Image 1 (tube, rainbow, N blue to C red):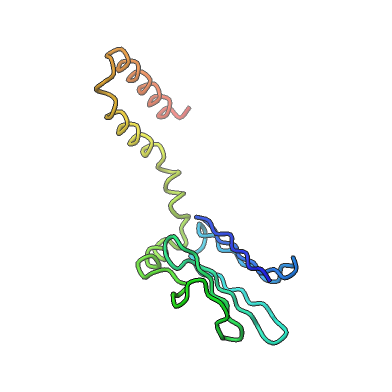
Image 2 (cartoon, helix red, strand yellow):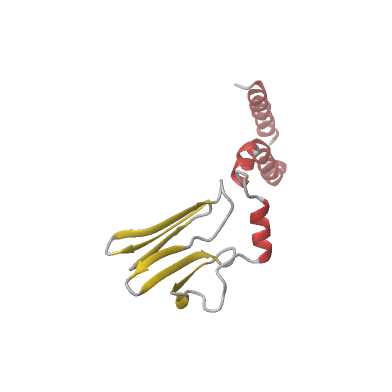
Length: 150
């Protein structure tokens, strides 16, 4: 028996395999649905095996396996497979939205401008005057191009 959990920043896919055959699978797309732990239930000859993978902190993923309600294995003994209170509250407040990526895509021009201004302040004083003029001409042209919708 093998449990595979593919965890990323936007989704979590889990499945249970026995001899290469997939018996149960579940997927959570965190950009379009609220976060939830996956719970896989696999029938065994003497009962049922339930596997619950999920985050137990911002950075760690844990797993708990129980057969007929009795724990048979856990990755972090004694630690629940659930986000902390503050993390769960933040995730719940973003449910039903497209998440941070949609806001990042919509605001990328202003974010890029903020980064450029920050970088410029680091090297601007050391530039010769001709380079400063050239940079300002390019910035104005880019601004005109962006605002004209071309």
